[in-house]
Image (tube, rainbow, N blue to C red; front, side, top):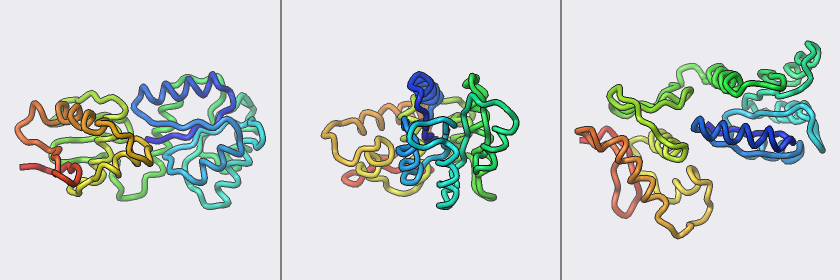
Length: 225
């Protein structure tokens, strides 16, 4: 899951970024409203976390503008303003949920998962499956044949991307751009290292190998043989 944090309090932003990373999620951070609006418009995020009081442009203005531009990304509003009329104002501006400060990260994460569940289109699977390998997208849990598999955040993102393209060849360029957010070749073996680590976790102790290297083309995850 990719989350955009629009928050001017650096301590809060660092706490959220680290906690999301520890939970297997990716995040970007914007310190002011104008930059947050720009990122919210131009990037593909699963959820926006928006502070009410921001420099340059307040949180409600960001949300209202995005909704007017038909950006439907779920928004969780963070605010120290806890009066009922303030919460109502936030929801009426286009926010999907409202959480007052201070907050527990466990509650914030639960609210994000609920927002994703609400906005999953009818018929769209919340789990990704290839043979007996399963990703539960809402909880970020990975298992194969019922056995839990522990992945670090980058390995999870790599596996999720491959499984979203199951049965198709995924090139190194595609992985660099969509998993590492690189738009250039760093000239390292970073992909090979992560593929090797991922393969040791999802294939090593099983009879059927799912992750394949397609020589000269890239990688593919499929039912295997």
